[in-house]
Image (cartoon, rainbow, N blue to C red; front, side, top):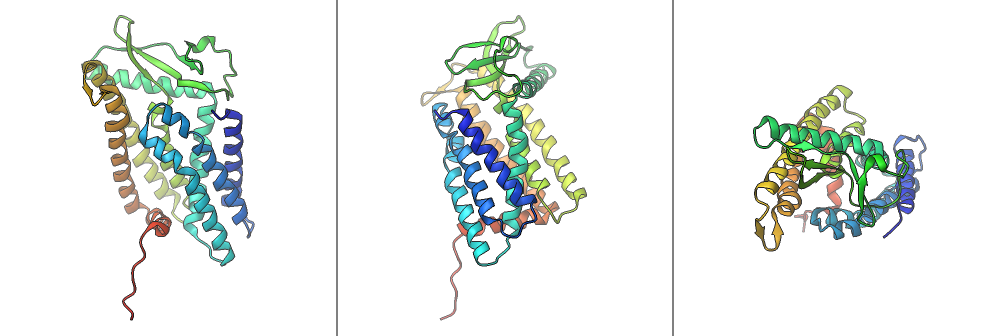
Length: 307
């Protein structure tokens, strides 16, 4: 397993060079952008073994494809500069990655921030189940799962709570969900349950738009972020309910939790993000144009009718 220090190096290098390429005023910046693309994509690529270990097919595909995609975009940047072509869509993508990854990594590397976000996520899921009359659950104390599989209270955490780079177990910093009498339910809320990744993607995409008025960008944020947040509360509450109610359910060796979490919920999340993107395309044509331009290299070229 690659050390967190190495992953930190690639992440910081990627953010530094992409940020310089997006915000900098220099004319020749393709090589800077290319170093940024390869560095940040390597950071995400190095997560592939972890997602293989936890058997998450969607994230395996996304992380494994990050490095080839980063190299391809870097080559695109270099070719454009060689031909004196300016591509606004590529410039937007640099800003979108920069403003998405920067806040996400800041939260994921600072235990205090991670625990706070996980706790809020857990409280909201339990609150929804309570007001819906489904289950009277309660939130447990914050815990941490270490790399060797042992767990303990976050209050006894011996690492640096402001910057922790040592590998943790699958659960990382987590909040156990307890029954009304304080017993374990077998379900815990972790950082990945917060939908931070989904929300921050839209934040970065909208902040990086350069020609769209801020009024329209803020409108897009007010539409997407609260909707994703609310849908995620329903998602977490639904997974908890299904796991507790149908714990003995099994299909092709897969239990209810794995089915609901790794397949059903992920499919629903992707559909929701696709629909939200369509709404944003109507509000912000610049965003739509950038996405279409970035898709051009992957689309089949039309044949000419000329003889």
